[in-house]
Image (cartoon, rainbow, N blue to C red; front, side):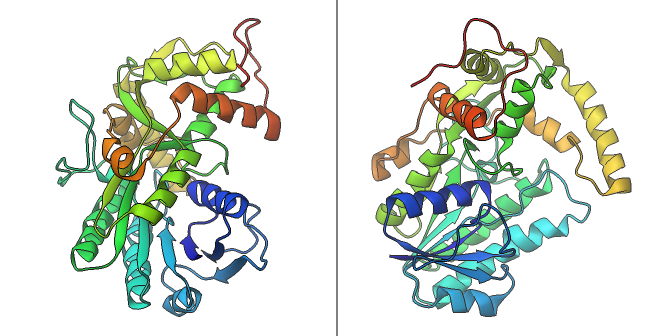
Length: 346
């Protein structure tokens, strides 16, 4: 099979392309803006690189020629931008451009990688694909545009475009340290002793999924998904307290005991946003990010398990693999490790 893939240099996309090249015989056409990215595979008989973006329709059409399927994973992933229109250009209009061109090219299998943020936060039980996600208030522009794109993509599916929509939860694991690799960035600070506090009382619950499980889920959807299908690809629902307990067990590093109240964190976020507008740098946090951390983002992947055979690691298993990779490939070792409770080896 010949696959056209966007977002190949991102966290999920780089894991996807690496997995495909190691474990399948598929050939890949990768749409990228920068050929010089270090995590981009070299061109070969199985890999063709097309330089362009989601608004370069001519290059998209050229790349799609002869392809059997599309996996659209590209997105502008960030907590803030001085010009918020970039989120709309990439995450909404760019996605529509890509998917519409795929339809026009006669592609019969299209996978759109959305986000749990498109479905909203949970107010009790874990959310499923059947729960209503309609709303008109948002925490930041990334969430807003993934929500709007999801609505538009669902409309395309309803009109007959052969696409399946996937909603990964909080992905973590080995891979480039992009904004989408939130957990690894946190783990690096944690293991270096730079994470001195956590937010709130620790009762907020999130769903974490190992990135390679999402890759396998996307390939299962490519094989078994039907037009209009929507699947949550998630792992374990845990509270922030359970998350840090697990990280402490896996790394052997004592977790931060200091908790910062959300109102104080929001004040810091406001100051960071003001500084960002003046300097152009990405703020360390924003008020919207703090608000996101106050909510529960828990989900149920039962439909994907039933229809696709989707499976996911436990949080502890996934963190063991991630920490081993950090220590091996990034040469990061704990600066505050306890004598007991060192990382478990499999």
